Image 1 (spheres, helix red, strand yellow):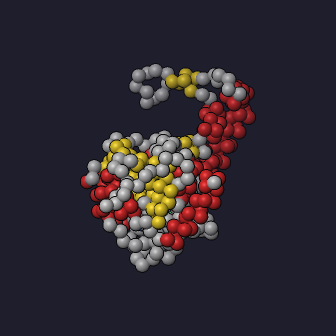
Image 2 (cartoon, rainbow, N blue to C red):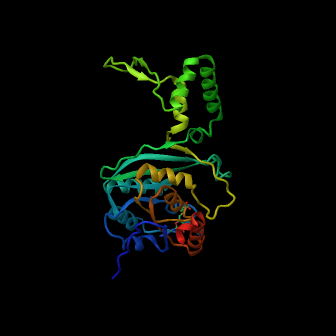
Image 3 (tube, protein in one colour):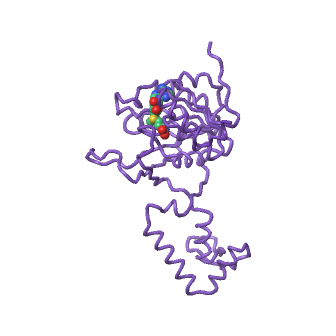
Length: 298
Ligand SMILES: C[S@@+](CC[C@H](N)C(=O)[O-])C[C@H]1O[C@@H](n2cnc3c(N)ncnc32)[C@H](O)[C@@H]1O
């Protein structure tokens, strides 16, 4: 009989070289907060990263090991991906959101339609809520420098022409009360007036606090330095982790590949447990994890 796996209680990520379905069967039921599932997509047959797996066995384990309110973030493409999404619904999961990774480059220049994105769907088990995540203003708009230029221009012209608005920004930055104006919104049926900051104060606040994350995540990653053919950016993984869990949550990464999700968990204070079948990928990911924060390993 299989012995039960103990779960990481903190500290270093745990990445095991194992077949994930068999390994998940050793996990306690209702013990995991988030599963980041980036399985072989099933269309790169014969390559080391794309080997068939037991889909039904995997999805049954996903259902069993997730806590109520837990999430699965599922990557994929084409028919297998749509099949997995439908099966999750029939297992009682609720589709919550879809995050599109805009790669800012194409990974398939020879196809008739160059692919520049990957899709990840977020499904929750029994009432999980997607968290509000703010991202730095410049990061959010990195793909749209014209917008950044327009915003900066607007801010400069507002500040340049209006001494009161300058003062309001100075008050805001110094932590003093900012004089607000009452405005009546045309959509506000109660007729109540809303208090609004002067626009330059809101602009500065957005730059300082960040803006709500978009469901299209533009994250460019150079090809050089990658250790896995389908490696996802750590920044994308951080977004998924923050959208679906709170600090100290337990994240399971059954198809770990390069270990990007492990690095995201280290960065955001989540506990991590992953499986990788291929010993070479496992060894490379283990090295990457150790190099990311060597202190954690003593
Ligand atoms: C799409 S890649 C994951 C990439 C990963 N998210 C990253 O950012 O690097 C899928 C990985 O799952 C591994 N794999 C395939 N079948 C597996 C199984 N049954 N159990 C564990 N790992 C498996 C493959 O070796 C491959 O490294």
